[in-house]
Image 1 (cartoon, rainbow, N blue to C red):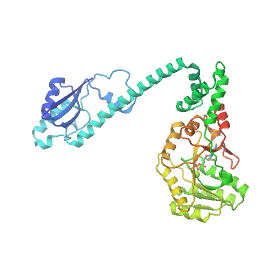
Image 2 (cartoon, rainbow, N blue to C red):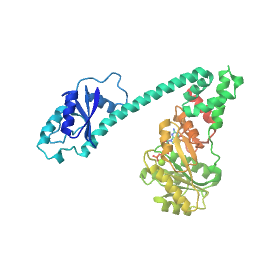
Image 3 (cartoon, helix red, strand yellow):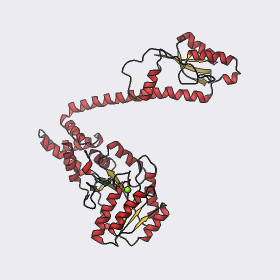
Length: 414
Ligand SMILES: Nc1nc2c(ncn2[C@@H]2O[C@H](COP(=O)(O)OP(=O)(O)OP(=O)(O)O)[C@@H](O)[C@H]2O)c(=O)[nH]1
Ligand SMILES: [Mg+2]
């Protein structure tokens, strides 16, 4: 495909130049006003399929685009060029129509020009993006190959850590550290591997908070279905068993689904604990004040997609409500271990400026890898408070333990 840019004082002259230069099969890709008049970008040997492919599929076309030119008739009465890809034929008709119209109306409306350019530029942008991806892949595999040649033992360690599902960002420094401190293990791959796992376990952040002995105002936040309500029930049951029925209260800000409130209300009834539904920060403040004599106030929240801004809004509402009752709430993000790394990453990002005190890792029993969750905790310095490995209330709740997490992670990868 040949692409040429033409500038002329008037559209008609620009079109003529396109036809003289590229012939009648040329297609106009875009046009716009410039200080010199109009600028037209035209192409020959152009295939619409190529652009459509590149708009829908990010992958680079393997073969060069087909040379079949595309001729598209314009919509009747539509100012030309009215579509992203107008044929020169169309322009000829436009030219004839234009001669019957006042000069002002002949100029392509800016809105039309705006609708044209993005389609073309989107196609080009996608092409550039995929080229960049390809290049980055090449460069990184070259770099990886080089790394593997220069430091084969360390590279093997990185690869093995990544097989646990850990990201390269997390695996690299662990391998580097294990490698430098393990000169005497060289030649003994298993000793080196144990050293790397020890290093991983030392790095996993674990929360010092112990809400089951200290109590306080504690909220669980997180996407839908990760186990917030079940974990609240587990925590409440444990606390109730150790401290009695007057020790805790259950609140929820989940006013979106009746079923969700009923779930927590049933747990509260079973445990003989008070329950309150809080609509907004003021009601939350009132409830926190009402139950100020309870050592533990657990707050459940509505699960939302990590892309829903209300997810983080609820966390802010709790901060605001509890603080206005002069209590300092602790917010724990509930993460399901069976969620993949990009989704976990998106979830943590969704909380942006909200201060998270740590996380609770649920559904370890259903996970096929712990690497994604461990990477998130390490990359975001998000300490784990508890882990959950089943639906039973309250049995399947445990204090987070770095060595157990590592041991579990390696079991999955076998
Ligand atoms: N296997 C397993 N299932 C769990 C675990 N924790 C919770 N569940 C189950 O996951 C499902 C969803 O749990 P919920 O506690 O309702 O999750 P939630 O985060 O409150 O959900 P929403 O309120 O809809 O956002 C239920 O069937 C729970 O029994 C766990 O650790 N392991
Ligand atoms: Mg719930």
